[in-house]
Amino acid sequence: MNKTVKNASEAIHDIKDGVTLAAGGFGLCGIPENCISALVEKGVKNLTCISNNAGVDDFGLGLLLKKKQIKKMIASYVGENAEFERLTLSGEMEVNLIPQGTLATRLMAAGYGMPAIFTPAGVGTEVAQGKEVRKFTFNGVEKEYLLEYALEPDFSIVKAWKGDSTGNLIFRLTARNFSPVVAMAGKITIAEVEYLVEPGELNPNEIHVPGIYVHRIFQGTNYEKRIEQLTVRKKT
Amino acid sequence: MLDKNGIAKRIAKEVKNGMYVNLGIGIPTLVANYIPKNINVVLQSENGILNMGPFPFEGEEDADLINAGKQTVTLLPGAAIFDSALSFGMIRAQKVDLTILGGMEVSENGDIANWKIPGKLVKGMGGAMDLVASAKNIIVAMQHVNKAGESKLLPACTLPLTGKKCVKRIVTELAVVDILPQGGFKLIERAPGVSVDQIKRATTGKLIIEGEIPEMVID
Figure 1: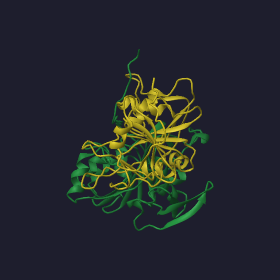
Figure 2 (figure 1 turned 60 degrees about the vertical axis):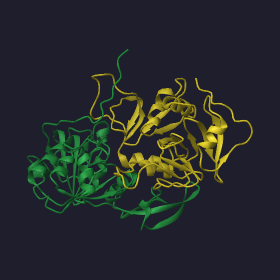
Figure 3 (figure 1 turned 30 degrees about the vertical axis):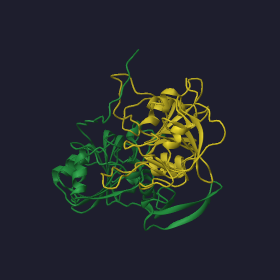
Figure 4 (figure 1 turned 90 degrees about the horizontal axis):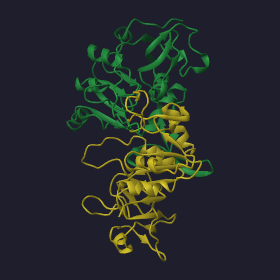
């Protein structure tokens, strides 16, 4: 089964105005750079974006924000982006902030075919407003849990380190982060990879996302891989 | 009175051999510098690392290897990488022994507020709500009073909560304080040169003082 497409613009050709789009990455680490550029170029609007973060002003999802292509952002932390502040304070964009583990697990639930999860994160806080609360005894302790629904994006875009033409994906280091659950949640999932190889070249024991979850795959180009916070120590 | 590094040094004494520990951003990150070399501790970073190492040497940084604060880091021998759902899975399942995080306010029943100031820009809670809702043991590293001189150890939090009844211990520039199961801040230790009266004045919530309060021992 060959899922290879030529490039990002072919991969995203049917992403239309108003869709819900999930993107992998943590900060700028492991973001689908090529797909984001193609979406900026295509100019699709009114997107609902699901991503842990919203990029920085001039990179990552920040590029879509700058062009006002995002109507609503679902994220856990957006502190790195000044344009985000302006758009939310002016009411030009809607924001739904949810706990990071809840976000990851709601995406996971979609990929695992579970409509909802129960999590203790946010119990007793404003995150719990309007949500069903149930008590469970788990690990020997009775606690309250919130019902949270699976997140089912119309499209998911992720970047992997290696992938084969059948869609199997392997991620590198912490560039894995949200990407596997984002990939598994999408009704249509697009993967861009640093190395696109033939079936049989990846070790089956090392696949992070099996190709059944991936609908289109392409060889990415010109990765910038920006570092948000360069922290180093001196050799002594 | 302790500076930030002093608070981190004192908290490092809470880290014991064999623990899996999650360190938050700010003072908690500094704790890693003071964990005794002769004990075995595994640092968890919620973006998907166990056995996280120190910052890389100049020129050896890797854009694909960062911590939850988006800083470049390294891996130690025996490290494991995993996705975000699994990372919060192990947090929820209480496999992580100790969580150290910063705070804006803590109440005398252990509620914590550390993610939102109404009227100011809201940046998001990140993983803080997940961590405080599930952690077995939470130590909060923070200043005893805010910039306006008001106590951050309160009868009840005034800011939107991150989690309820979860904080076990607070280490500030003035004191080590435990939250009692029935409520109340129990004074455990004074910072070097700080009097019990100073701590009383800086604490609005119910402060419980029993017997002589020892001064912290920090090397």
